[in-house]
Amino acid sequence: MIGNLPLNFTAKMEKLLGEEFDDFMSSYAAPRVYGLRINRLKLNMEEWKGMSPLSADVSPIPWAEDGLYYKEGERPGKHPHYHAGLYYIQEPSAMAPVELLDVRPGQRVLDLCAAPGGKSTQIAAKLQGGGVLVTNDNARERTKALAKNIELAGVRNAVVMNEEPAALAPVFTEWFDRILIDAPCSGEGMFRKDESMIAEWEKHSVERCSLMQCDILRHAASMLAPGGLMVYSTCTFSPEENEQQIASFLSGHTDFQVVPIVHGFGWNAGRPDLIAKATQLDGARLQSIEGTVRLWPHRIEGEGHYAAVLRRDGANTDINHLLESAVSEEEPAKARHAGAAISIRRSNEKRYDQREERRAAKLQTKKEWQNAGLKQSASKKEYKTRSVLDEEQPIDLWRQQAEHFAYGALAWTGQVVAYGSRVYIQPNNMPSLDGLRVVRAGWYVGEAGRGRIEPSHPLAMGLKREEAVRSVNWSSNDPQTLRYLRGETLFVEESEIVIKDGAAAKGYVLICTDGHPIGWGKYAEGMIKNELPAGWRWI
Ligand SMILES: C[S@@+](CC[C@H](N)C(=O)[O-])C[C@H]1O[C@@H](n2cnc3c(N)ncnc32)[C@H](O)[C@@H]1O
Image (cartoon, rainbow, N blue to C red; front, side):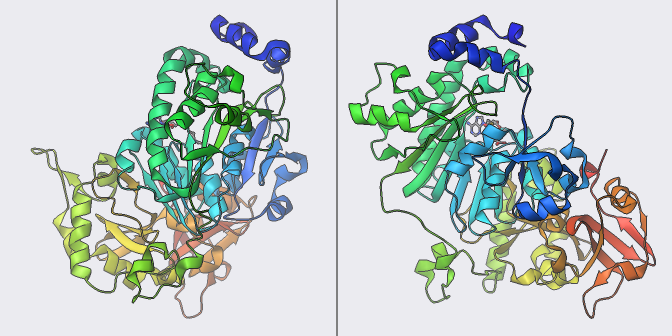
């Protein structure tokens, strides 16, 4: 490994680390460490420990509330609990930035460079379903993994976007309480974990990354509410992408201050001495960069990271949009913060439908259109709706049929919206997303077709077992669980299915393992037809 490191990289590190350089280099010969994070949207640490075979040999990651080291050789990705979204496999130092973001239920949070979604799922767990997570990545292919991870984790209050920060900025001006910029970077901290990153390093030169980061930071700043917090992080060691980037940002944004991080857990202070003299920053502000943090692989058990917490001047926005939710319909001015108001459309429904259609007509992600039951006009290269959808009224169908498979569905917080044939529950009080590339407009709950709603896989993953009209539960080592995850048809006794009072046995059944959903099946006459989508199966 050490022999593969580029010489210009090691020379730079030697200059940067001085006496510590040898320790740093030895870290490349040390065994890798592995981390996972328990998904609090589904269960807590104690519950997980009580049921997981992995729990015998894990230890806490000191800076991450729900983080655990697990041993090499374990394969947590190959366990039914992974398919139930009970944890996310995440590099330990990558868990630090969200811990620093101080996310609380009810806040509006933006994860601007989010794919594949490790930190977004961590943010969602901290929001506990209250507030909004807007999770974005500008790489279209990568947003597929992002959406899947959000859905696997059972997140109900996220909107997944595929946009440039410049396109989001005018829509979300001063809108967010918290913003995470886990910036694209030269990835020097990934060399040990993934040797292919060494080749990437030359391509994604430090200079090129710094320019991108500067642009992303500038747009992010305009979306942060006064008093809000922003965390900037990278998995690289180069000062140009870390301290220097923050210094340049501070010199252009006098209304932002560094919030000093406590340097515990073997974390090191940021290095103002590495900042180019040309940066226009006065003594105290320059020195404040010591309050940022470097996670070095020879000081901690993790691959390494850099993080800075920045606060925008203004009233302390410990805004809890949940607590401000008791807004009556007579008080529209206050409705902006009405996080928990149920706003399924009541009036102006026709007008709303037309607006949704116009909104749908602007969707640009072809895949999303295809998934949504829409087709591309070959001649004009524009997207248009299938006329049959106009008759089917997806939102009305949802409202009529949701409670056939998900108990209390009409009481869930959020606004029911349809993009084409797909129905979503969108967090309340979002600004219009017209003209933006929307990958998921909210919690994707079902799809309309032939006069009925098919419940979606993300709906299953976001439900609690007790919210399902019908459910069946097998332990994670029951062969039925594996059969289901492989996409097989299941043969069951009707008595195994728990059915809400008054409901028929025939219909959609939430399939659970150790009490947690893994997907839908359709029960009739002793047989469960497997509804697990092909892309979600165990292979
Ligand atoms: C370090 S990765 C993010 C990892 C992610 N936060 C996680 O925890 O799983 C950086 C991401 O930034 C995205 N990216 C690059 N340039 C961007 C831009 N201008 N706007 C938004 N995202 C960008 C990349 O596609 C990449 O997915």
